Image (tube, rainbow over all chains, first blue to last red):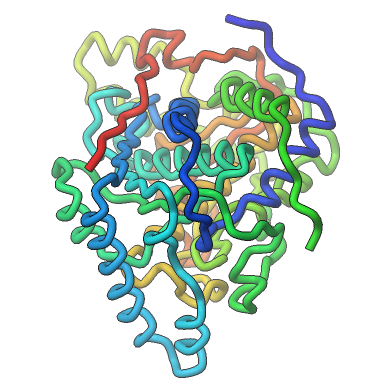
Length: 211
Length: 211
């Protein structure tokens, strides 16, 4: 075991900056990531918390252009279905949003969570099996922050039918889709969420109660 | 909008240290956090990603000692039930683990996720309503990292019946329990998960496939 680091106030301030400038990116430049950059980022994922140390995260890197286009077309269709459910004004605002960069981002990564991992031996999931999926979500957040520290943006696409994506990617039955991620250099940077800049939804204060 | 920060290699290295030294803490010192420390940490939570910027996280701070003891007793009972489901050798190893610091940690925080938030206007959850819960999990991860940067540890307790905890804490029907958190100064620090140190489960390499 190494000696525990003491993090400086300067680091705390930069960490706050990192949290403030992490964005859900939909506008990507098309240039590729440096060779090995994605693998290096994924090597940090194993440092994420997971219930029972089960490490249920499973990453599938999309390299086939035809498969990527099938995913993009599916998300476009799901997005149009979602638009139709809003009232007229919201639907217009929704259609004006750019919701994914699946055709531009240099990397597309699907993230699944194994519902039956051998690792962890079931610790902590007897009554809350959903802990595995929460662990995988935190792995994505780890990737998100580590990427942003390198100037690399990530966008999480959830406007899709998970069963369709599972079928397109041909993964084991025990894997649940958590996210479809676009990864690459962002076109613009901001400390304000795009949905706030576009008047969809502003930030709120923390919701805290006591008992 | 401010100017985008460029994060240094030094920051990247310290961020990696932070990820490596974040632990799921079960052994706490009993000393209180500085006044306002928890509120300050929770003010960073609003920087976490959330689907449609819905910010579904809801925090309940447990201040009543009797309520805290009821939660601890419930977790002890759930843990004994879980132990009985393991085979003899695993059950002995399981019972030797310390699984929560609900009686020692200076702060206990329950985290819920609102399944029907007004904020976000439904964006991104038509087909994946679980995105709200994943957002709340990432808020907890944000809190976890921000706390560790201040030398404060967090332990996530999931060995419990969510319905029982919801009932004890009397929260709105639309709130789903995500976590019961113990927060305080850790008794020991390590860059190796306690479950690995105690030979329960070691770390694995990232699981990456291509399509």
